[in-house]
Each structure stands twice: as structure tokens, then as C-alpha cells.
Length: 507
Ligand code: BG6
Image (cartoon, protein in one colour):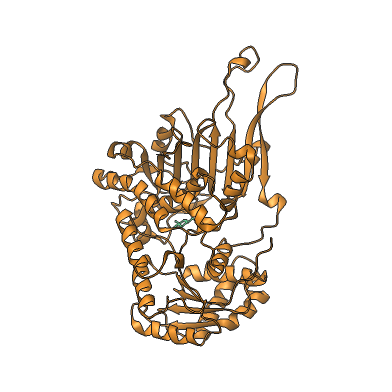
């Protein structure tokens, strides 16, 4: 079914001269305009602290677009030529009332009463902004028009702050007006997890603890902390990636079948899965989690400064740039199946993947054959990025007179089948924001359930005061991560080696 164009709307972006707006939001809107999903009735009203007028913002965006690594495609596009005519700007301090009075005046003259407020600002402003918008009557929906608020991550820094922020926001606006973003949900492969599971009997039928041994969820990055030292030292790998991005992947793997593909049905099942995450005891919190911080070295020929020597990072920082966890989802379906999660910076390869390892077949019947050891378990690898796709690893008989097996993999790569073009990942999120579909956005209870599951780890580390274990850049992370999984007689899936490449012998 082809997607219908969005209704008329004014997109009010707080933080309009910032990185997110120029790198992702505007290119995504250009892509939506190009594909006809967003029409000339979308207006952008930028708000920012930098002095300037409409022409300044347009000129700014124009020059950012020319720096994109797309051969000038976005800047030269017809979509941008049309969109630039509909961009305006208000400069000022958005903790003061004046800005909101100006926004109100602009919206009053807009062709429709619909507005989406996008908070692309540091998180300490989220609560204040929502309050100010509400105080000025800007969140009041009337005459069939909508008022929505899109909030970027991080949503809270621990369970208490996430709860407090939800309470503050929901005392002013309804949950149906709040769109909490997690950009992983904009990725095609992530959205495909539900279809892969629920549109395929042969996958869903095996999707439980009778057949699955364990699940690994990895988000490995080659980039280091770079210029984000201040933010990262206060945040760390766990807060930055786990309760949001990795838990979104986990929820899609672990959730029960929704009653339908509507937003509430899906969000309810995801929240149920997240609230079934076992809350680790203080002992488990120390044994089921390990941390690392990268030292000096190089990744892909680029030198890497040790995390603790990075600009704006304290030299005796105890912040982790790598974390690995073992978690359990305490439902009937997943009882006893460990979920191993890991994420880190400056690692050997960029690789976001979910590996579902099935139980081993009984070996007895092969004893008399040439197969001397146990058979490798089947695996399903959902390759989120790069090289988006899905593979299933099986054992088959190797040709010949004796019975012997070789592992083979059935591979599907998006790029082989579809032209997925150069999407930013924000297209579907913005489109859904405009049409009012909250499926790809996080609900308050899901966010709080995620924080509740990581809180014991934060508490354990704060109490122990231990320094994360060093690891070399371009590695698979610290040795303690291998120990975490090896103790259970398992091992991590090798990074950067998709099954597709493995089969071809390419690294
Ligand atoms: C962000 C984190 O939310 O996600 C970053 O703050 C991280 O530290 C990024 O690099 C990863 O996103 P992606 O889409 O590049 O995998």
C-alpha cells in the first residue's frame, strides 16, 4: 500500500542551527519532499539562540547541504529548492516567554493549525520547553488540528530522572501528543524484525526457549568519542546505548505477537517485554556486567586518543566506552535464555547485529559418521548495519561418499534486492510524526522499564568506584567481555564478519 502524503503542518524545530537539524532532519524532509510524501504545505519554523533571520537559516542550511557527502544531490534537488521557500526563523532564548509569543503569532497566521514541535536541544531543556509551550497554549489541540512534541534522546539519565521527566511532561500534555525518539527505530532492518518474526511461520514457530539457546545483541562502533568528551564522560556507553537503542532491538526480539500492527498494540507488547527484564540483584549486577575504556591506538589507520586523555574528559574518569551485559527476560517464552548485549566505541568494526543461536541437535545419531565433534548450532543473524540483511546458518552434508557436514548460510541482503537509496533513517520517523502514528516512538512505560533494568548496574558501579578495564582500539573490547560469555560456555559472534562474507571467505 502506497503511503499517503502528510497533512499540512508547521514543523517548529528548537535547535534549528544545530547538528541534528542540518545532518538529519532537513535532508530527511528533502527526501520526503522528493518522494511526494511531504507537500508544499509543510513549513519549517526554526528556533535557535543564534541571532539571525529567515535568510540566515536558509543560507546556513544551504551551506551545510553542500558539505554533505552526496555529491550535492540534496542541495541541488528540486525538493530543497521548493522547501527553502518555506523556512523561517526566530532567534532568542527559549527559556524566556518572548519566543513563545512570537511562535504563537506565526502559527496563528499559518495555513493550518497543525504543529509539531521538535526538541533538538540538550536534554536539560526538555521539561522547561514542554512547560512553556503548554503555558502559552501552544499544545492545545482544537478544531481538528494537532499539536505534537518530538523529543530526542537522552530521555533521563537514570530511572528517577526518566520518571520525573515523564511526570513533568505528562502533567502538561497527553501521551498521544508525545513522540519520544529513538533513531534506531527509523532503520529499515529494525522495522523488519517484526515482519520477519510475525510474517514467517518457520521463524516464529521456533522463537522460544525450546529451540533458542541464547541471543546476542551488539552495537559496535569504530568511531571514538571525538569531540563529544563532555557529554560522553557524563554519560558512558551504558546510558548512551543500552536502555534506548539496544533495548528497542531486544524488545522486538522478545515481545509477544501484537493483536495488530497499530501503534498501541505494538507498544504495549514491547513495554511488556521490557518490563519482564529481570531486575538484577546487587550480586548479579556485579557479575552480569563488565565495562571497558579504550586506550590510545589506531582504528582503520586513524590514530585514536585514549578515552581518558580526550578533550573534556576527566583524566581519572571512571566512565565506560564499552559495556557488556547478561540479561534475562522473565516470560514463559524466554525463561532461562540469556540475552547478551554489548556496545562500544573504537572497536574493530562497525557492526550492529542480532544473533539468535539455536540449541544444538542431539549428536547421538552422527556418532558412527565422519563427524567427530558436535554439530554447530543454527544461527539467525539480523544484520542491522552496515550491509543490512538477514542470514540463517545451517549444516548440510558435504558432497562425497561419507557422511560429513559443512556450515552454509542462506543470505538476504537488502542491497541485492532493493534500491534503498541514501535515506537518513529519519524519513519514517518524521513522516509518522506528521501523520500521527506513534508505533516507532517510545511510550513512557517502556522507557521507564528500560531504565529500571539498567539501574542496578549504574548503582553497582557507583558503589564499587572501579575503573573500567582498558581495551585496545580496533579490538573486540576488553578481555572481561569474553570472560562474561565464556563462563557460560559460549562465545561472542565475531565482529565485522557477516555470514555473507564468511561464506565467501572475505573479512
Ligand atoms: C547515538 C549515540 O544515540 O547513537 C552515539 O549517542 C552513537 O554515541 C549513535 O554513536 C549510534 O547510532 P548509529 O545510527 O550510527 O548506529
